[in-house]
Image 1 (cartoon, one colour):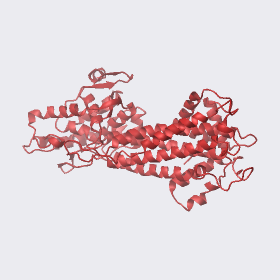
Image 2 (image 1 turned 180 degrees about the vertical axis):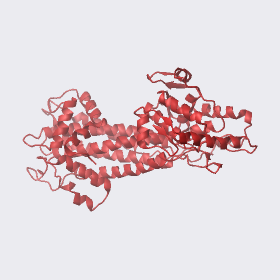
Image 3 (image 1 turned 90 degrees about the horizontal axis):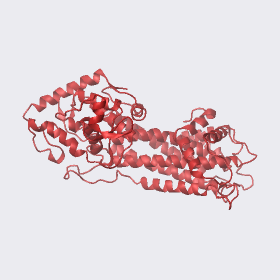
Image 4 (image 1 turned 180 degrees about the horizontal axis):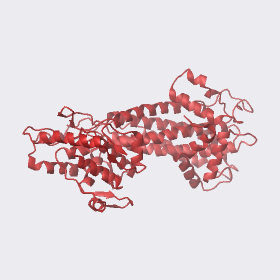
Amino acid sequence: MVVGTSGVTAADVLAVARGGARIELSPEAVAALAASREIVDALAAKPDPVYGVSTGFGALATRHISPDLRAQLQRNIVRSHAAGMGPRVEREVVRALMFLRLKTVCSGHTGVRPEVAQTMADVLNAGITPVVHEYGSLGCSGDLAPLSHCALTLMGEGEAEGPDGTVRPAAELLAEHGIRPVELREKEGLALLNGTDGMLGMLVMALADLETLYKSADVTAALTLEALLGTDKVLAPELHAIRPHPGQAASAANMLAVLKGSGLTGHHQDDAPRVQDAYSVRCAPQVAGAGRDTLAHARTVAERELASAVDNPVVLPDGRVESNGNFHGAPVAYVLDFLAIAAADLASIAERRTDRLLDKNRSHGLPPFLADDAGVDSGLMIAQYTQAALVSEMKRLAVPASADSIPSSAMQEDHVSMGWSAARKLRTAVDNLTRVIAVELYAATRAVELREGLTPAPATRAVIDAVREAGVAGPGADRYLAPDLAVAEAFVREGRLIAAAEKVTGPLR
């Protein structure tokens, strides 16, 4: 992975955060780093105070710092800002955060020396992951506490996780890999802390996960429609063309592809005639489609941020070093919250479909709770309870973090984004959505198999066969359900549900 001056892509972030890709600095980046450093060194030599170079920070920016104290100033800002608390943040999040800070450093707008950037790359390449804590970022002036814990590792202080997963003193890990701790100079401590990198990294990973989950939800919605003997006429392209939301059309097309050749659809006029399917079935493309369009908007924001150089102050090509407010996390925080809302709604409609499959009064002939011997067996009754609990938590997580602000730094930072908090709760929401879809998959595949004498669609059959091969048992007497649900969750999380359907349908949209 070669890091240049013009930003990185979402695929780059995923490759480093989750795939362990190695990093190199491009010659262009090294040259840009050296050029911007010359500007900072020239300003540092002048008697006039320059924010971040020869002054204090935040509410303490009015103090001019003498040259003999500036190295101490940079060390102190890292040490004092590394004030996080709570559980450790996941390894992939920390790697994404470090890589994205390196991306901005390499832009040539931060005034950091090339050797500092190289040390950042060396730490990532060595598989050393700083210990970063859950709480400490307000998402303004960047993700200060999380980034400070990463900068602390570069200085050879604090704790970090080694490649073997063991947490040890950072100085020991650096020494083992032949990495010399950095000695920070003017502006460098500030430049390592001042960005939206943590919330952006989590946004990029959530987008990748949600893309998988939205396709998965289209597949499970199609399975449920089939199991309920619903009609696929509502999925016709001409119906969605007259309300031209792109996500809605894509979702309907996916469901239609999965249902192609089904012998179960179209029986809604048989024994208990009904004019229309329930909203949770009939409106599946509208709800999932709105979420898909939200993903598209969030992806646009992420792409813009990935192309950005977020720091304060910044070094401009004409030699000026200017203060700014680009570190404010509002653009990223908003879409993180939007995605949590969309994910909660997708989970909610999936849970309603599952409940319909289990209710004998609404399932059009399926046994109560899809049980083998209802009364003796409880079937999937409590699996739906678990799904409902997950959805309930997701509704709480959908309350926007970005609508809150708590002033800090003696009212200098009097409006903050809470973007880090938005990102943290979105990660929980994504995990919960995965489980919710897994429960619908578990129920819908069982329900389809209980429709004796009717032939499911080829894609449905492929999904059922793949789920059974993965170790999820089919209809039968009550058994210990938690292991089955765990396998179903992994089946969804790893993209195997989509892969099974696509063997028949071709690529889903």
